[in-house]
Image 1 (cartoon, rainbow, N blue to C red):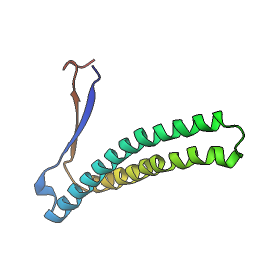
Image 2 (image 1 turned 45 degrees about the horizontal axis):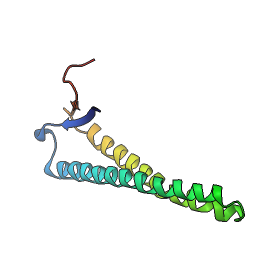
Image 3 (image 1 turned 120 degrees about the vertical axis):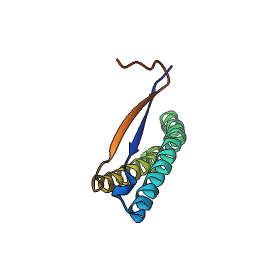
Length: 116
């Protein structure tokens, strides 16, 4: 069984204003949504990329651009999703650095509970 690591961040609410807490929670939700889209894009566009590469290899009579443009175009959305996720993670990290008393905890889900 594969272990999954879950990262939990805790912060004292007394150290942030309601507006700052609202911004941090909104950024967490945006980052989570970006992760979901990235995972979906990688699976779906990865399959499309594989199919288009196979077609490019099987059909050598097509012009070079017609064979290799579809795989490149299929790689663009997952690449963009990774970039967006990294930007959102960096922005959230910057906001969390400004808050005093932030603690991050790593939780191991699945498998045994003892550490190696």
